[in-house]
Image 1 (spheres, rainbow, N blue to C red):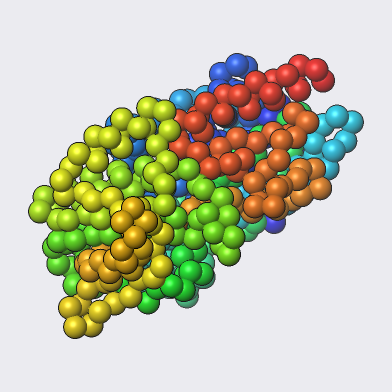
Image 2: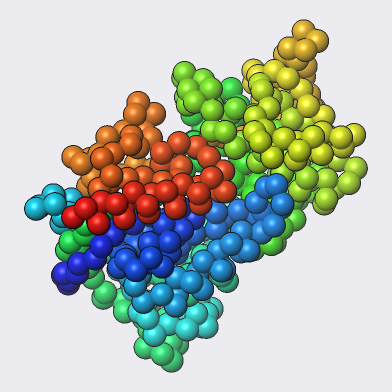
Amino acid sequence: MTQNKISSNLLVIGAGIAGISSALEAAETGLNVILIDKEPFIGGNVARFNRYFPKLCPPGCGLEINIRRLRTNPAIKLFTLAEVASVKKNNGKYNVGIKVSPRHVNRLCTACGDCAKVCPEKTANEFNYKMDETTSVNIANESAYPQQYVIDMKTCKGESCNKCVEVCKYNAIELNQTEETIDAEVDSIIVATGWEPYNAENIEVLQFGKHSDIITNVIMERLASPNGPTKGQILRLSSNEKINSVAFVQCAGSRDENYLEYCSSVCCMASIKQAKYIREQHPEAEVHIHYIDIRANGILESFYNEVSKDEKIHFHRGKVAKVFHNPETNKMVVEAEDTLTGNLMQNPVELVVLATGMKPNSLNGLTDEISFDKNGFLNLTNGAITGCGVITEPKEVASVVQEATGAVLTALQTINRN
């Protein structure tokens, strides 16, 4: 284990769109910034998206520009595979212990891919929500930053295999690399640890995990993405056949005291966006959206109005009671009451997409300095430690970026006072 000591004006925890935006805004005002993320790549959940709404442009549009700004800004020190282990306040500053897990691939890596070609071991592809496999030495995608491979030592056989070491002409593989500890002294902290999708397996009546033709909204993003497990082809996972009918189940676990009692605010728009994915690939497919209330605030209402004119997209008001597989027709059946007509519907479709909500990521090491509400979202703090992004409440990407700027202003005020 190696140990380093560094000092900086600002620590940003989380390098999703909120953390990246915060780090860049702060560095471009003259602050020195430490940016950390627990993943081997930056970009968070946004990096897994196929498109943003309402313009439906790919996430690379924003991430590529920000990564270029990040890469060329010497005021930002980036650490991936890094998590906060401890925080102590001392004379108006924060002493932060940061644990950096070994990547086992050093900065000499050119991402040529020779190591992956000879690697005989397989591991679940976390970037694609385990829908496919990758080799033990892998990189999230062709646009990942840093452009360095990482080795999953849970499946790698290490020196008993050694094939990646033998083939790497750049001496970039370090199978014996160990954990690093960083002692950082900072004036202010921005928490931007983001969110994870709610585990739909908890909702028994929706049968997620019981049939491959019941998926979640985040899985749909990967299916539709050109760098996803199906290279962007949206097909029935049970048979790889063309889709003729799809049902989107809104509030899958959300607005329910048994699961997530709050509204995640973006799920309606995400499903409407994904309905457009279906219509583009399968022009004859019938799309059904089962909703409680459509949440389309501000300029997003025009996006909803545009999509609702599509005669192949049908909106049904009413919470879904259950989803089940009909073996006679080999279709999934979505059962719900239509509250506008009072009729009970049993809607047979070939694919069901569950709109699961946003659950704030847990955070270690800072619990003595900050507090959370009953749903796990970060409470507002005194300014020296502040939050931005979905860790404070559910919101769409544009609002996340705006809040990141506000968090930097709060941090600047704290630093200037000190």
